[in-house]
Image (cartoon, rainbow, N blue to C red; front, side, top):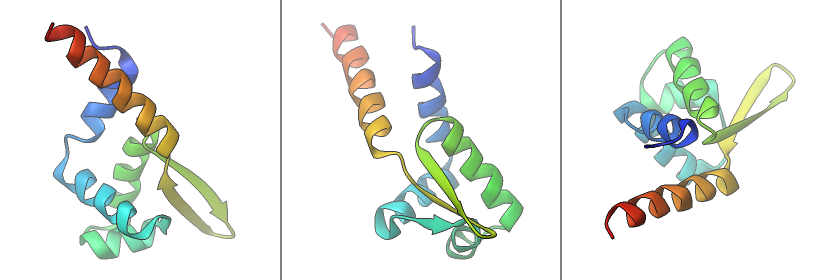
Length: 94
């Protein structure tokens, strides 16, 4: 059975829009909510909601600079979650 962290991680990546966001982060590194909304073609409030899901899942981190919130990948946690998921899959397939 999957633990809660892995479940949130997989659920966060299940959305096509959130996958688009992740590829945007791979391209840009650190971006604001408004940049995400503009590049993905969604409203700012929708972008905020989707980014919050990715953040709760441990995929993104954020920092505030003035009025802007910048989001960026939580690389070490993503690698940890991927390794744990790989381990679960490997144990299952033995």
